[in-house]
Image 1: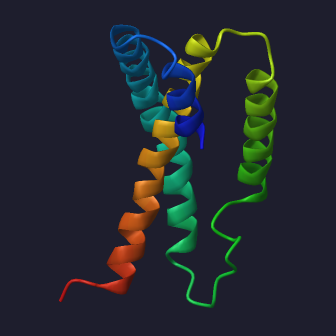
Image 2 (image 1 turned 90 degrees about the vertical axis):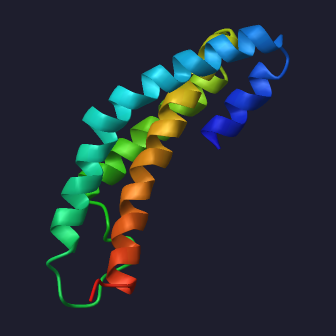
Length: 119
């Protein structure tokens, strides 16, 4: 959803300007993914994988993580409705959106490893 907003906002600009803002958003995404969301994903997986009993669908994150999500959603809504120029806001939205996507692939990787364990 975040990336979708950024793409819509940048579609109003020339291709060269779009490329610059996409590139900056990508550069922002890498450290956010590596030093932020990936650590949270790894903590969640390290907590969940040893559990043997049935897991709740909402149990993949701690209460603290849900609180962080609430803060991030609130900040996103506030920024989206602010007077900040949308092309600059697209950097943040692309950076966070791509970082979330990359971190989400960590969950998918472990999910597929559980479904298809190596023999």
